[in-house]
Image (cartoon, rainbow, N blue to C red; front, side):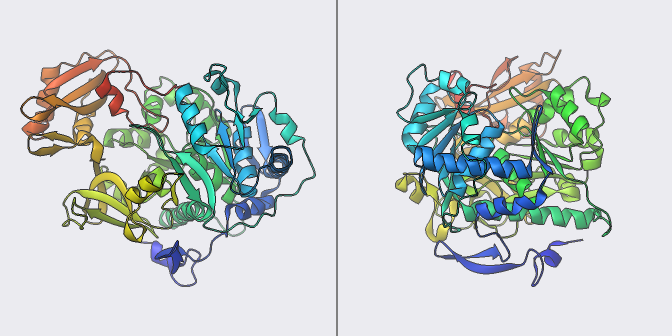
Length: 552
């Protein structure tokens, strides 16, 4: 059953039509909010329903709006923040982060999410790059600057932010004129190689993402028959958030989308704790969770996973990094009520988080696919000559949609290199389309050139991680005097296992070509270096140094 035509056709709630977006004709949702402040204003209808749950703090929608209005007034009157100014946020996930985000964008200013895992040098670089009018920061991140504080007004989360809450408790939300294509926020790229770049998202970008998520929810409700009886009052949706706010997966897909539908968000704090996640799911009756990176495996391996009631979870969504079929199967086993509604998505910061989605029975049948392009998303695979490749061939993934970023902040040359003619975004990812489904092979920069062959690390890593003695694996190319590069594998052993390179090489050779079998090995006990979104930091492995990120 394909429910999408019924939902997107003429007169349907998610009707599609064509419109000019930054000068280019694209498919958009006809019925949509004009800007993000409109979503915020509309959230008043949820009143006493809970919006944010952080430990003992439980903030409902009515009180959240009051805090946002007061903080917006304080930003404007105390710090002179105006439309187009930047308000930088450097903190762990906390209510003040979220309130600042909504307050700044409601003024027409740009909240800038700084990576909470950055060390001092990266923080200073980003502050110099975005040049904020004010910095909202917690003590731990400020301490990383070693006393060399930036020349900008600073509001400390722990000691100073309360004054912004109390600035004007009767304030109304700002009325600054806003347009769809006005900049709304800046989030920095992961910075897995080189310096991170500030991605400028518009109000249109984020609202288009929200609409895609709402469309998918409506589609799944039809497919799974979840529609409630008209007389029944639906229970409030509850989303557990364990992703960082400075990432699209934490901020846009959770904070903004939750507000649009009146959902409750329950937040974890500090270093990821699988036991705490299980406790929160059971206690708060969580209905949705999006484990990224190593979160899913850590929950699967927790000794108490079978002791908690996880039956409330009916939606599981993941992505941002490869999701092995074995992990998908494990998550289905411990979250049985979400087994038919699991999703694996593909997207990137420059494309506002989402482009393709695999879900339900189709994901189970094709677990290595990231699914089909979503409504409003145009996708092409192109060769080095810029032309579309033949069906089934590998090519660089290009995207065009209302979700494509406006630009890299203050980087016109890099923007021009990323956004091609007619606003097609070069993703730098390599993939294949088979029967309409996208299979992501690798980042172009991660491909290994061994002799005359391109080798994708991803397929080797998936094969290695299917071995029972391997917890996780990473593959990179290292210099070779004749071949140019050879394949090196980093393997983290499963608990109690002692994997041998010869055994693992034979395992890889059973299913992959000889030139893809690693010739160099490093077996280690420490976890592989990853950034906050769960992406593997291959360059750290290649350089042999430490991770530039400070994990909590």
